[in-house]
Amino acid sequence: MSDQSAIEWTDATWNPVRGCTKISPGCKNCYAETFAERFRGVPGHPFEQGFDLRLVPAALELPLRWKRGRLIFVNSMSDLFHEDIPLDFVQRVFAVMGEAKQHQFQVLTKRAARLEEVAPRLAFAPNIWMGVSVENAVYTKRIEHLRRVPAHVRFLSIEPLLGPIDDLPLEGIHWVIVGGESGHRARPMAPEWVRSIRDQCRRARVPFFFKQWGGVFKSRTGRELDGRTWDEMPKTLREAVLPSARQGGGKVHLPTSP
Image (cartoon, rainbow, N blue to C red):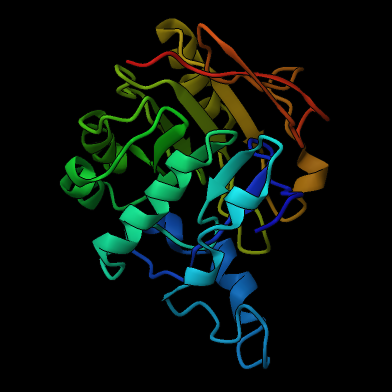
C-alpha cells in the first residue's frame, strides 16, 4: 500500500493481490508488469516472484489502519476479478472496503464479464467505486457488464486510449478518465480522440478527467487539453473531505447513487 500515489486521480494504492495476465491490447505494455519484473528473484522483495499472480492476505486489513480518509485505488498491480482469484478472497476484499467507511475505494477491472457474474454475491457499500478499462471501441462491450453491477459509482478508465471511440455509451456511468500510454514503447494517441470523448462527456453531463498525453517523456507532454487541465470528479448530494495528492488536499465531490 502506498500513501503517496503518483496516479493523478487517486491518493493511495492498496494491493491485496499482486500480479496478473494479459487479456487485451491495453495490456501490451503493462506498467505494473514492467515494474514487478525488475525485482524478480530479489529475496524478500514484494515482487520477488515478478508479476506472477498471488494473493497477499497479510495486506487485507491495511486500509483499516488508516484513520484519515483517502481515495484508494484497489489493486493497481493486479486485477481483482482475475479468473484465478477465488471468490471468497474477493468477498474478503469487499468486506474490508465496506468496513473502512472513512475511505473511498476505486476498483478497476478488464474482466467485466466475471465482475457481472459474481456481483450478486458481493456487498457494494456506498464507498466502493467500480470501473472497467476500455482501450478502444471494440472493448466498449465491457461497459454493458458494468452497467448491470449495483455499484453506487460506476466509472470508465480509457487508458491507454488506442483508437477513436465515437459512440461511447455513458448512460449509468458517473465518471470517465482518459489518458495516453507512457514509456519507451508508448503507442500514439490522437488529440481528436480525446476531444471526442470529452465532448461526449460534456453532452451527457458526465465528469471528465484527463490524466496525461503520455509518450516517452510524459512529464514533457503534460496534462493540458485545449489550454487547461480537466480534473472533474463525480458529484453528489454530500461532500466527503478527503486528501488529494493531485490537489494537495480539499473537498472531493462524490456521486449520488444511481
